Image (cartoon, rainbow, N blue to C red; front, side, top):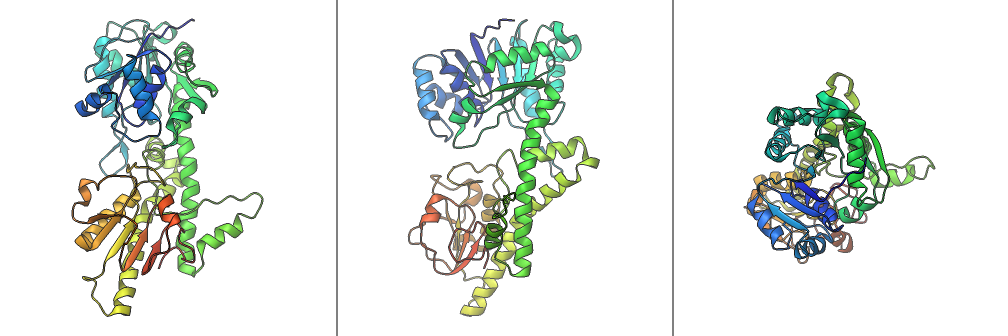
Length: 423
């Protein structure tokens, strides 16, 4: 079938939704972005961006100035609707919270029409795309949807998860392969036509449940590999072995490629997605659960190393723990970006603030100010930091280039030469 997409609506203008909207708009397609944040809507309509991503500001400014991109808080009719809203947890049990997706579905339901396509881009537990179809059907009983009507449905529904790297989103949206999973083959065909408008990578078609699981599997695989490195760092610390040297030696094997350990795992994908697998099949996802527990436990281990460094400083100096000064290097969840989502470094800094208050200095070169959760410590730069204990949490390029600071070191990334990963 020859699908026509003259107008596209993107619901959720965050780290994925806005770049995707800008990408379609760059192909001279009219795009209406929907977001609950009036600030985001106003910023975008001024041709500016409310998030940091290389080249995104240029693409948005061009699309808005040419009249192909506009933002609003109220859904409008379109040929295709892309839902790119958050999928956080409910409470402390890592149960997926699908309320944002459901709210997005119910918000667009009044403006749906026969022939429309609805695509879920949000990373979600297996079965969410089918639930989305059911929510839409409940809100629009006058239309038919594929979970009941199959190929004959009035509205097509599919899942197409993103798989991009923060800092390279604009390039990877175009170049990366995309997995497209429709509830029916006709749904897949419609979504394939949509993404083929700008994707140069291969668009691989499957069913919706497999597409959902594919994204979760990709990030669970990465999580397992990171957990292996993080667990090695715990073992090596116990056995007085330099983990960085050990991994370098082991990686000389032609079929071994161990990752580097760190303070934990952050970001909205790897730190979250594996729990969606666990929630769907808790009795048979033992390795994935253990992996999450290893990586989620690493920040508390780092805090224990800081406590040990404080005790060492007190023994050397004769001073009390109430006098020690601490510098914390990095808050982002990965190097050289401003994204703090699910960041173990941010959690560690927050815990250090509870212990040291004004005697804590936080250095994060990729943001202009500290988040509100760090309102009692100081925001500094790497230059001229005088502290008794230096805690390296993120291997930003600025920290790699600087001299090893004077004082006790807790280095979770192996950045400073001669440091053994922790004091």
